[in-house]
Image 1 (tube, rainbow, N blue to C red):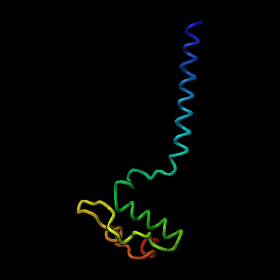
Image 2: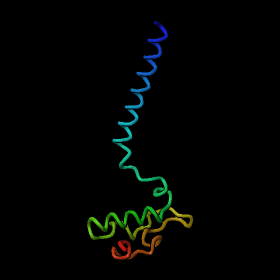
Image 3: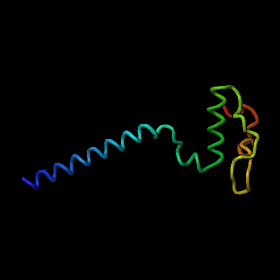
Image 4: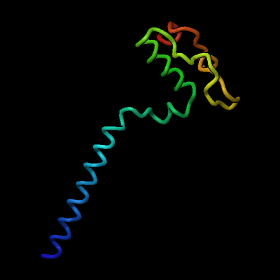
Length: 91
């Protein structure tokens, strides 16, 4: 009897942990950008351009400001992508 109750306790604990992990991933997982996008400044900038231009019709506010770290130092998204207007990134 003692072995069965210990086994049930382990199974119930595992199920509770699994459900908690799935809830956390559901809550926070959708807002996190994929790692490849975060690491590569070109992909990050291009994604920002596409999402901002498609929703507002304008480039992101800091598009021409050197905020992105690259191997050559800080650069603007305009310098990294070569995009100067929304029509360039929505092709």
